[in-house]
Length: 270
Image (cartoon, rainbow, N blue to C red; front, top):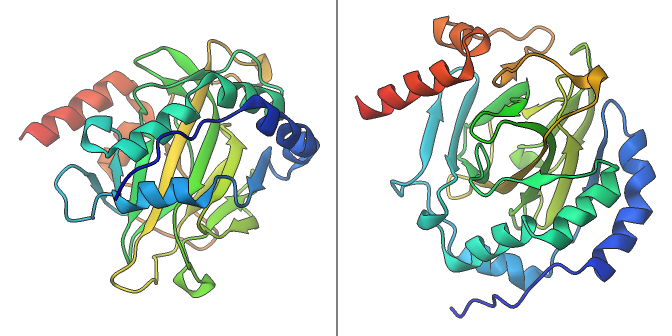
């Protein structure tokens, strides 16, 4: 299949979209977020899907514990040309300018390493418990401010599950559920109170998987009222939910991220 790599984001197309949805983003409950449907030309995503790595391929990082059962891939050398091109476009000047105009956050910095982002894939039975994201990029020493998640799931049905659930600050109720349908883009603010996840196991057919592309955007600083000590992902339980908060999770919450990364690296090399 020939891959069309001529697609580029253009400000004259993106800026009216940002202007039309800025107030919706800022006023969203319980934290700033907005959903765009049919965000890209479909043929652009068809190229990405045609080369999307199968779950059985060895390049995926595997997460399998009581809080997350998923696959992740951030190494662009293991991705196809259409995927690499689209990721680069999401890090391009026109798209970063769009994100600034949409959210009101100036001086955004994209991540060329796609730390924690890139491609994500969840097979039947997989899940990602509700959580607040890590708040700093330790390698670049930057504050994480925005998430952009592009869903790649054609003909995805409600019964398959995989909704991105948005929970209130106190974890008392689910405010919104976003179905991960093809060509849907979700943008939301990265805050310590931005509780989200798809905590219920996927019920899609055995030959399907929940596929997405994740991009994160940073700044050198953040408003004082948002500042907090550096932390990794903070998982949060829903009402009536119980899962094992074992020693590894406790260490992940309280140890410096550099030590957590070192421990994870040693585990992979064992």
